[in-house]
Length: 157
Image 1: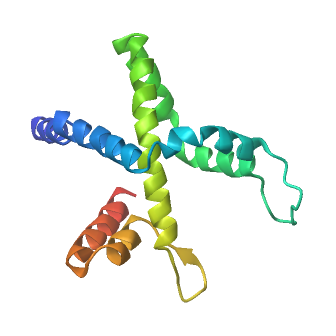
Image 2: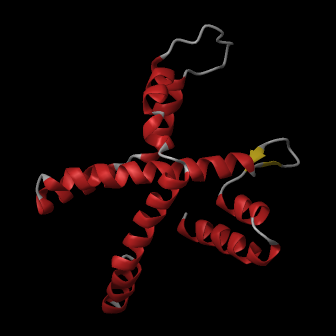
Image 3: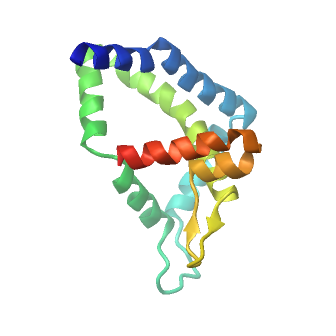
């Protein structure tokens, strides 16, 4: 059983998938005309700016960023970076930066689509995510992928 899982894992995370992920990032970076790099100064300015018109219950941009990061960065990210540097040497940091630049375009596109195709449920709560932008953004013949994504998310969680 271990050999089967190891083979499947090697196939899924093999060179084809890594090239596909990096290629998607490059494609989106070019399609967005380098948006993630050209607006990075604006993003940092917005991140550290003081809000003049803060209502009670509002959070700052920095608080929003740190909240999102706390839900994203875990021990796997920290241990993964340490392992990559140990195994690959200091050059691994350069390739992490390169993949991060193209990953920013992918994450931006994902967040944009999630906001564009989000919905409100019966309770007035905002709901969305990949299954909603697959269902609402693509033609009806792709709806099976929305259900597959939602099902895979339930199984993984």
